[in-house]
Amino acid sequence: MRFQSLRGFRDFYPEEMAARRKVLDKIFKEVQKYGFREIDAPSVESLELYRIKSGEEILTQTFSFADRGNREVTLIPELTPTVARMVVEREKSLKRPIKWFSMPKMWRYEEPQAGRLREFYQLNVDIFGVPGPEADAEVLAVGIGLMLKLGLEGNFIFKVSDRRLMHGVLDDMGIENKGAVFAAIDKRYKVSEPEFKDMLLSAGLDDLKVGRLLAILDSRGPLAESLQRLKGLVSLENKATLEGFESLERLADLMAMYRMEQYCELDPSVIRGLAYYTGTVFECYDTKGELRAIFGGGRYDNIIELFGGEPMPAVGFGMGDAVLEILMRRAGVWPEEKIATDYFVLTTSPKFMETAIFLAQALRDRGYIVETDLLSRSFSNQMRYANSIGAKHVLILGEKEMAEGKVSIKDMETGGQETIEVIKFLESSSQ
View (cartoon, one colour):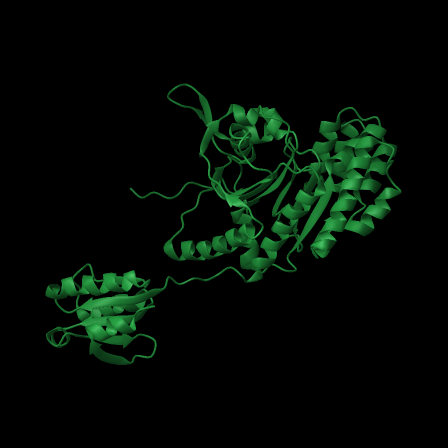
């Protein structure tokens, strides 16, 4: 019987892992430049952790089950609740600001499609303990810096808003069922314009309010410029609206200081689906419009308190690996990695195995990647194997070489070959 991987799950073969490792190394180095420290966490959590604040949509997507102790647990669908739990457990001893990142596996039972899988890796970047836009700007700068470092200039734009802005607008309109309106706004780009208007009408808005809301939502464009245009459409006498507006103005100034303002635009339609966002929200979009939102994040100032800790502001983002790979492949910047092998040690007789292992270990101690023949193959089959793994050099241990205490070195690129004393070879191979 033959088996295949489950739908929405992936296998990674050596060449694929080599390419992924190169991308991940770039990601980790870029995040660490800003002083973020790496963490890790369990793959299984109590389901109750997600009932508290993740929202119903996440709960319907969990790989959840009752364990042998009859406790309701789940494979983690996102990391923010877990990170909040970790902060609460050591909140007295952790120095502020807390700047953490991680890239664990996660699981969501949803329909697999381009960039969306049931098992995936997600980069999480979080700052705890900073209440103002300064932390929002740094998190945005990390996200933008990552996209640039990965060679994606011109392929992305960050759409930014503030949930307080829309809360205030809906308050001024006298809308009580804000949740339904937020849900409709979050789906705006996933449905047609008539369908979107019908959703707003069903949420309790009349035609006049729908028109006013659409005018506000359409105030999109360069961050600083669009904020000035939006100023004439909203009432800044509303406390929530004013707080959101002033925070976005400060954020625009900060992004200019980072010299990254050209990668950000205002879009009041950005709400973010998860229930715990409280202020700044943002999503990174594909400029060609072929993919859904690449990743997103925002401010969630209440989450530590919700999990039993002292009030502590927080902001961060999560970036999945699947959609990022699609974007990089489309842009022609996904690495095509060949696994490098520096030396293959070829033996013409099993009696030379001890010498082969000695040489291989000596080279490995010097930092080289080395393989030896484990199958007692013929000379020609060993050469074919060395060629198949991309070995740069083949060390040939034959009867003549061993009798003279020498080794023949074949350069697999040029085809050149030389014979040298083993001792001199080891001296010359020191890195």
